[in-house]
Image 1 (cartoon, helix red, strand yellow):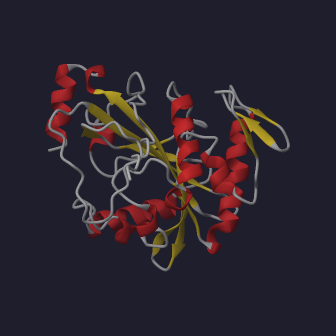
Image 2: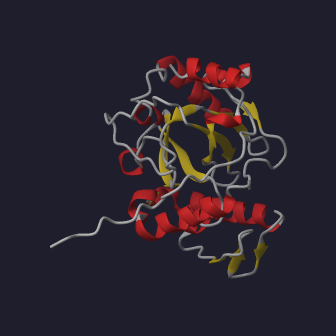
Length: 269
């Protein structure tokens, strides 16, 4: 009996036209942790890839929910606070229309508002992946997330773990950097979100790229795509949880100059 291969979740590239920032060229973002203050309410963004990224997020939430969503009991209050915070942001964002029970997105899709499923609902409204981090003992732990576009990590492996364990596979995340990151997390103020941006090259355009610890990412040979994550850190004022947002950009390598691409290739090696 012949079996059909399931259609890929993302059969074609979903690309932004350009990167809003070239982090490998800017000394503020080139080195870890590369943290900068967010200006105004710029911790969430809507860009030209919104519609296709959101369609993919809808498919992932519908078909891969256990892989892209996790919420520990201790994070339920923080998730509820994040839900209210994001809806407050969307209420004044161009292109969104909110009622008491629904939110209509800029792509015309109407999403039911379900406060009983806060992270799953938000995952259908914003391009950002959203992670909740809360202090336990001397470290912050990952206690909840909607993670549709992982870049070489899996939510099931990381949920409930402290930052040092989450970053075990990252060679540059040593004890000194871990201590600096923990101090930074402790110092985040609700009125001042922070941002950073990473950078990698890929031959694969796929946004959903989970990998387990020890499973190596294929090394790019042609460097066809540039993938950057704009990551923001926001303190929720009531629960004190830290929200880690991830806005994923994938662009054609030809969108930057040959000189800037050569500098990127040198930086990622």
